[in-house]
Image 1 (spheres, helix red, strand yellow):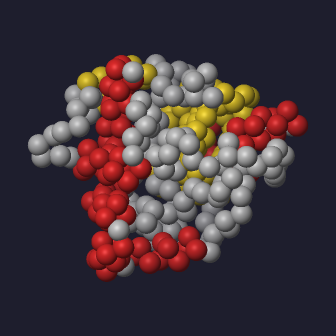
Image 2 (image 1 turned 135 degrees about the horizontal axis):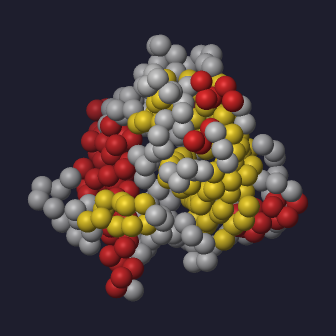
Length: 321
C-alpha cells in the first residue's frame, strides 16, 4: 500500500497505478465495473466525474447536539473545501436533464482535525452489501437479461425502484437540492456514550434557476445565486430509534425521529476543478473528527476502499498526462 499526503491528510491508496490484483478485491472490481459502465476520463474520478469546487464555512447552530457528541464540528466554526457533482462517469454530463447528484466536504475544524463527508441524493441504498452492489453494476453493464436475474436474486431492489419512481424529478440547481449521508454513523459524547445517527444537508432557501438552462448551466446558476444572496444548507441530524437498522444502508428509518439542526454550511465561493482545491482531495467518508465514529455498515467501509482505489488510478494517470 502507498501513503499519499493530500490536503494535509495521509491517505492510503490501494495498489496505486495497478489495475490488477490476484485475486481482485471487491474494491478493485467495483472500480473496474464503473469503468466498464461509464468509460474512463483519464485523471478523473470514476463516479461523480463531472463537478466543481467550493469553499464554505460550517458553523454550529443548536447547542443541543453537544449532548450527543464532543466533535469540534458542533463547537466552533470550521472551514470547508467541498465539491458538487453529477452521478456517473461522464465528464460532459448534461446539467439540463434531471439526475442524481453528490456533495462532498473536507472540513478543517478549529482544533486542526480533518472530517470528511460524502453525500448524495439517494434516501437509501439499493442493496445491503458491497458484493450485491458489484453484481448490480455488472448486471447494468451486461443488459436486461442480467438485470432480470439480479432482481430475482435481490428482491429488495424492487422497493428501491418503487421509492425512486415517486421522487420529484423536476430540474433543480445544486443549491436547491437535499443531500443525504445514506450510511449511519455514531455520535460519541464526552463519556463515550454512542448514539447512532444519519444526517442531511437541507437547503435554507429556494434559489431556482436564474440563468439559461444550457448543457453546463449549474456552475453559472450557483454563481448567480451567490451574487443574489447567501447559499446555505442546514445539517439536520436524525437520531436512530431503538428499532432502526443501523448497519444497513438499504433500510430506511421510518416513523417519527428526534431531529436536530446541528450546523449550517454557508458557501463562500465556487471554482472549476481546474482552478479550485477539491480535485486533489479523496473524500473518504471514514476520515472523521473525534466525537463521530463509523457504524459497521459494510457499504460504508467498502466506499472508503473503492474511493482509495479510484484515487490511486487517477493519481497514476495524472502523472502520465
